Image 1: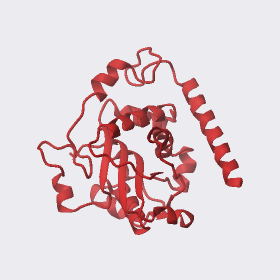
Image 2: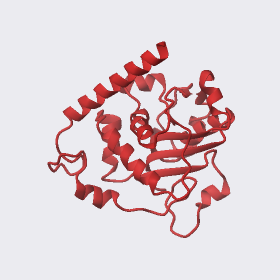
Image 3: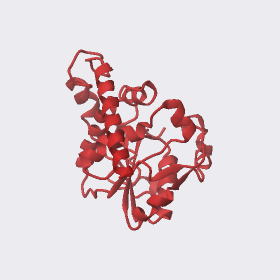
Image 4: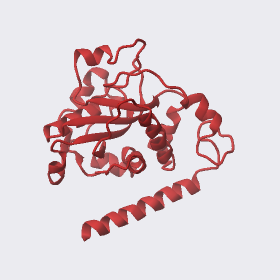
Length: 249
């Protein structure tokens, strides 16, 4: 009974937050600033988000040839089994994620979930996960920011996919430095032993296909560390669902 009441309160609070975000968000395109009733105008959507790229099925890095996997994934398979992304993390569309992550424009989260859902629908032989798990923030980072952008995206995405969301499945048990501020050669070590599966949710993972949701995937070490934790807890398959992918330099 307590769980049901808490879920209803969480749902009501989330609805209020999204309503406030939509109310405070100006009636203009988040990219070009032109007046429009949507968060993103049709010309910007067509110009910046209407193009598909061939990508590695494993990590979603762009591919220039007909191969299914990039060279990095051929040499060393990550813990996750596949990745879907909506677009490259590059100007000007990176502003959508920056505004959500650092500007608290929560009304952008449903738009980003919708764009990711469109990309998922375009995948051949798509296997829907049995549950979604957002990449968790550590307590200090969560207290500082006030919200988890991955969870804000995962909530509307779960509704679009009709897949259960388990926001407390994974725990960040060790505070880590932001990956963007860590040297590339140190990023894997920065995430070592950072994630664990909450014991009360571990039974859900036995033989399960888990979808890990995040906003941006750069080196992939964050989602790989969480995918490895899911696999150790019994998950049979892990798919990464990420709004944007940073192209390799």
